[in-house]
Image (cartoon, rainbow, N blue to C red; front, side, top):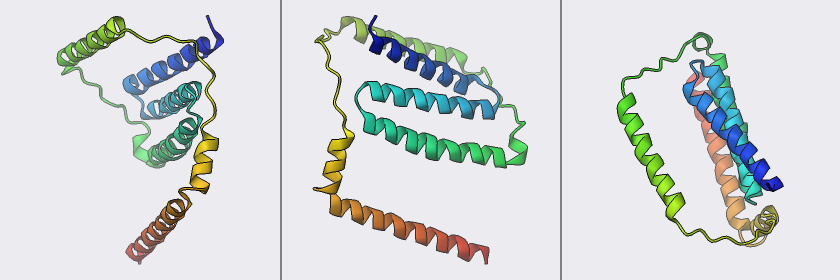
Length: 165
């Protein structure tokens, strides 16, 4: 087995196991921390696919922004830390039928599709190309977007300050 295949299966295993823990855990803190490993596993798969820019954005946006915000929100709320999540089994039969149909359709696509197989090359980095485009062709749009976000941030701070007074 090739080195890249082993690393891919390792990232896939991390992603699937941690996503399963996110869904089945009864403790919201454990679900949040398992979501962290799910995001890192997906970012690792992006790196293996040669999409290093998307992998970095995945880590910065989802792990650095959204997940940390969720965890801070959960941990700063005093009464929600010890709350057990109720996982009812009221719709298990329709869910099992839906999952079975989806699994059958995906298996049929994988088995009956004539996949093109060529020797693979290690993909080149994409961040250099994206950086060159942002600095040359799209610099005006990039700067205008930065100014728009700054104005939105100042507006949000002003509205929040007015509501406190």
